[in-house]
Length: 318
Image (cartoon, rainbow, N blue to C red; front, side, top):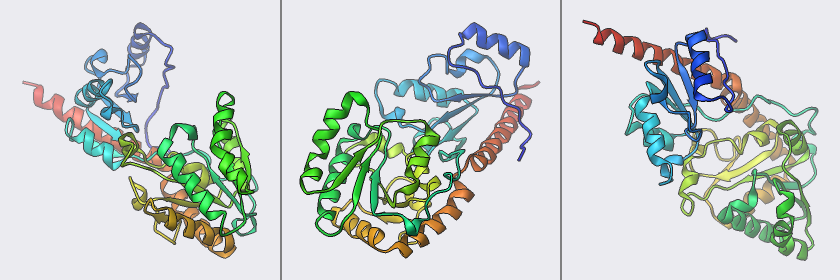
């Protein structure tokens, strides 16, 4: 699928003078700045070339970098935001904001076990689980209560070697009740998706009340579950209700331990329910959360930015 745009990706290691030489040679119509964390990702550095600012993290809530984010919003022709929350934050500084959810280029694991034939394997798979203090406590409470009601094993992903002891301490109460537990290190994304293709249930709590930064999240942590056909239990928070329908393509529930335990038990013990939810989720995933869909939406925002820029230039002409 083509949308009429040619893109050049600039490595973050290039200096400002190197970036400007590329601009002088290629004469781009637009510049896309992804995030504001790189010191050269500033619209003011690139003259009159229209800039689109793309951000999917809530850095605007961090007092250390909020002013930088605001400068990027104000200096750009338009903005691509990763969630409703970010859209509303950015819109205060620039009205031209479109939401494009984080997507994935991997739409299916290689030869995954069918959802209704998987063993009772439950997983929590963030990139760094021990950094999510409230979510980690919540997951452990769910697991310990669920272990009193049914038999399953638990996988914890994203455990760095340097934090193995910390992870063992976290998992020790689960082991004490006889639960089979595995930990997995950080790995390449294709390997990560493939490793999930035998898991039955994936957990994804989001605790926005205690961690305001989490209000900016969309679907990044859920994409691997979807690609691997894992039945999902997630919080009724952030943009999740715009994609998930409870008991239709996933379990969308409040952050209440009893509710999570009930939903997990159903998914572990009723294979046909897993199959039904995974089948519906796959259709929605392919329609809304793949790189192809994101590219379509981003191209639309590029087109809009060009229109805004041309209109502005025409208005300035005598």
